[in-house]
Length: 394
Image (tube, rainbow, N blue to C red; front, side, top):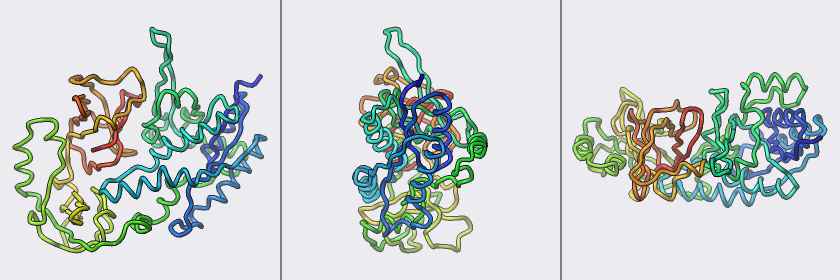
């Protein structure tokens, strides 16, 4: 007797292939579905991001496993919800995370709805994360999002915007496995994807330089690169005025008179805080890092060395509308705090921090200052293995 119908997002990679295999072994009725997202020949290096080859590999895996297979074209939805949003954020001097948006807006929204329309009880993906659940005293179920057992591959960060309705309907078949175990299973079952390299994030952004992509809509605009000295009075004044959480979370404010002009650039919106490569300036004892961008004045501010004070903040602000809790039972009330671990980027080791809820914002105060805090990126917070929530960095 079948345990239920599951639509697997077959990407043409080894992880989703093994996910489909395991589900069939467990007695589910499995359907493979390949999503064509967004492909623009003007920016994507097709030979290095062959979606047709991926689709074909997914079909061959489905054939090998004896499961039905379909392809669905989500290009227009992807362009509207992900690509256009990225252009808009970069034009404002912010750095979005397309992988998190893709999971929230495409895989666990549109793809989920399509799957349910096919009579699915669940969807499944090849993400390295897990879930479990418990029953509340009132009788309702609460689902928990847990990190993958393989700490080097844990992808819970990318799923930080999932909600209870989505978690209820998803299965993560490989979250309890190590990557080497997944590959071993693929070889054992002679799946065509067994030795296929892992994809490098989103194809269109992973295989072209970011400026090349952004220049499709954002124009080149010559501006100045200004170097801020590490002993600038800005940092002294900042430290003397740390009276509140709001003060602590404020970004450093620079003007063109605060440093020396050391070069030129072709558009502040092409750069992001913490960036080291692409400045085209040498001759300094230590590497230069972007410490701030001003898209209105079209200025890039840089600092010398990775210990430059302009790179570090210990308090991050998330506006009220940008706070997301995976669990409905954990929303903090104003004035309350919670000890957590947190990260501000994928693969960053978890850092000790405290959540502090104020009336209009959530503040995350780290025990140690964090490098290259970037507006538009996501911060996630955990209790041990459980991802509790996330928010967009202000």
